[in-house]
Length: 530
Image 1 (cartoon, rainbow, N blue to C red):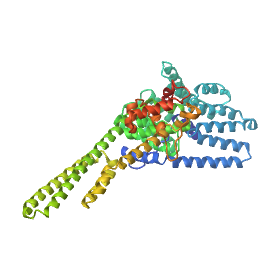
Image 2: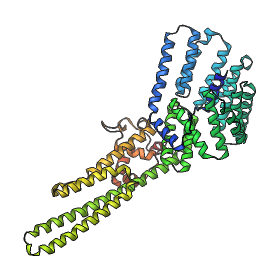
Image 3: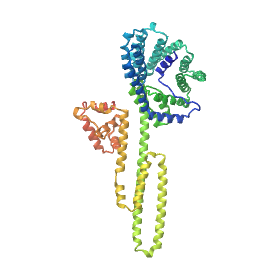
Image 4: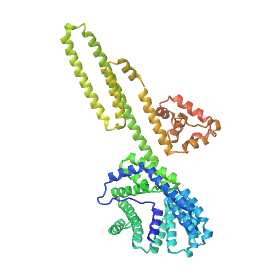
């Protein structure tokens, strides 16, 4: 019974936070661990796929309908918060066994399970119809509890999704089914987990914290401990203690990702809290991860939750990146100017040294001049080093490249390789390489956010107007222009500045592509909504 209740509770919370044993970890160390976990997300998903393949092999090898039913149920559990479409497919396969098994409990569990996965997919009208088909009088205690959790989750989803006064009606139904769960749950620990959730909703977070802490003193079940810790994060959120909330949400998010879940809420909540605290980069990365997983799972509500405030975070993040780019450009110009001054000084010294052979009588005067010039060079070098050091903390990404560039100029100057020196200074290869790398990173990031952009774009074009990247490209120039339009940068002058093209060139590209669109009048508006 306890395992069933834990699974059902996981159904509507969709969390499983890790917790620190022994000495509690600091928030900083937890966030670093979460960063490492996100970087290894693909590895955890491969482990989930391996478990899925293992069960599929067992299904193919099984000849018993009962065994197959249990294996399909396990496979459904693996897919539920990982890939909702596949979970629905597995339910269809399991449904084929029902006429053979002839078990009314299985029939009703099938309706509840379909409601469960369709709810994750955001098909709430279908969920309501499916739950109406459940024959309550035929349910045993475990199935009835499953039904109550499904109904509580259904109305909770509807309440989260509704922005009108109707929302309060759904909240009341959610609370009513939570009360039904409490009346049906016999296990003390499971009962207190749900009771703590009710206390939080009813505005009694201190009572919830007290209840949870008592249970934490003797809890042994890992799954129950997870739910208690998540409830703690919600209780502290109700109290306004954001530090504690971040602490427990970070543990939750780590466990979600290690379990290869894609339908979750902890990372989104954590991202919003970090955004409010000014940690823009982490908030952006966490929201991007949440968006990617929600889309992959086909979890509609989670996608809506992310998109509500992702544009705000994205805008602030892009402003931050633009500011860093401006600093980098300023630093590059400053270093180039200092290098030019250094070149002028070297040329001047060279001419002075050449005159020494014919000015032996003025040797002492010339030596004094050289000494003065050397002092100036030392001073100039000292100023240059202090100026560069001023930007070190703000331009770490570009420092090594710029420093290497400066050292190469100095070596050529000291070796009197003036021709190479002039050639290097006049060359724009450095800027072209950096611009190319920047566009390459932009293309990758954009396609991670909008993986179907090229396909959707070409659906708006005539056959001869379809655009595809060439070999070695991620996005072509034309596609990059309309990628910027998709991000909300529609002003041609802004696009021209971003891409380093003239305004006329950008106008030309836009007009040429637009002329081959299926609907020229609404083409760019359609691009903005892809």
